[in-house]
Length: 382
Image (tube, rainbow, N blue to C red):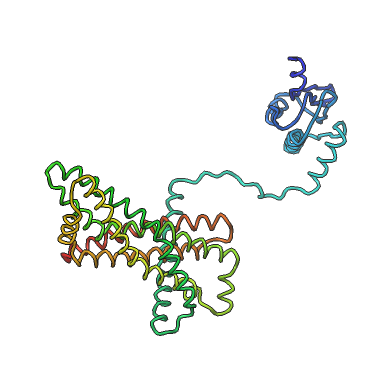
């Protein structure tokens, strides 16, 4: 058995004749999956030998071959051409000769193969900076076009179908209620549970209602709803517009004289602007209910105690801040999703990248906007 395996192993040996001919003897199976010798091994042996006038092959001991042999022979032919040594192929199998003739019928164009180049750190920083600057300019330009489209809407000149707006509002609003309900109740439960552990030490369990109420109404409901809509609706916008780019539907709209900003972006932006405050208001209620569950079940508070403390702690200013934040987040999510969709390339992978980028951009925008709103409210003592 060991001898049979040895015969099947691909191997080569060299025989140098007196006239300078170097014969390459091939033995065993030259197939993919086997450990095949490399052309570089033969280069070293040729360079170490004396003057070589030509290269020939002896394949009598070879038991099988496939494209692995062809790849090796192509390397040998390239090596012979580089070292100015004629390579004779007449002693190779007829099938191998035909494939080699076919492979060399059309010469390889120069510059086709990619050469591995190492980019320096300075070059990478420069390329990233240029890409960031271009992306910033595109973002500013897109926001400007969206603002112009909104102004045309105010004067009644915007070109879009009201049915598209109503359909998008349904997708962004009613169809998002289940996931918003689940996340908001869980956030309220978690917030109340964390607060209860600390407040229970001081016997101040009743302030769990204040913690959950103010936290949900003023910030958390809007932020969580915005993140949900970024992953759900913003990604959907990017995928829809990216697919339209692939199918050249946006180019068709431009050809017909219809502005894509007004026909595609404006309805989506208005839908999220109108629906996000309503979803945030609903999330406020669900979060307070989640805190109520913990307050009644773990802290021995009655329903009326929790309700009265919530009404006492949460003011109308908190509600307006939360609703304003939600409206801003809605516009940001819509702009980020539509921007990445309009920037998408014309391939399936580009649509996936645009969807991912839309979610990341939306979440980052929400966090930055929340920080700015919080700072402004602190300065204005709201």
